[in-house]
Length: 207
Image (cartoon, rainbow, N blue to C red; front, side, top):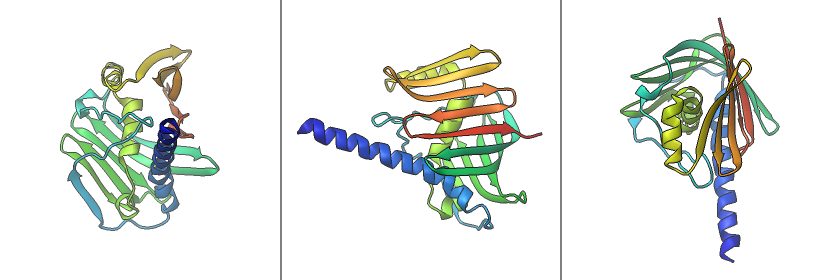
């Protein structure tokens, strides 16, 4: 009986976490034709992100970023049968991370920021009530220092590895023998696959 209840709880957490990711990524895209408004979420406590059904992602300090970023990215991906695509301007350094989501006309429709003071969001990210921490967690796994990720993920019982395959740097997160996430990083961008939540997307660095 207890095992059955535990399994149901685990499945519920997985479904809710997947829904949060879907809302955070696809929700912005679905509203990308709209103009941003003044709604905002001020800096504050970081909401928990379940990277697995039991483990909460340990957000790293901004200074743990692998290298500073200042670039325009195009993100295209899928979640089940849903597909999404949008532009995002990324500025990340030792002070924090700022992600500005743009529509096809280059106008800002959402802003997500992470700093030692917490998380801040505005525009459609706030209007739609999205849990932007899921986007920030993916960002940190992709772009923060491997040594820091190895250290902090091991603290929650997960294994992080980084290796090289041809021209790609491979990052993987495992829960025991289960592959949770795999990222392939190249000079032109990266591809992320979350096997546990069932979504994937590619990031292309725009000139």
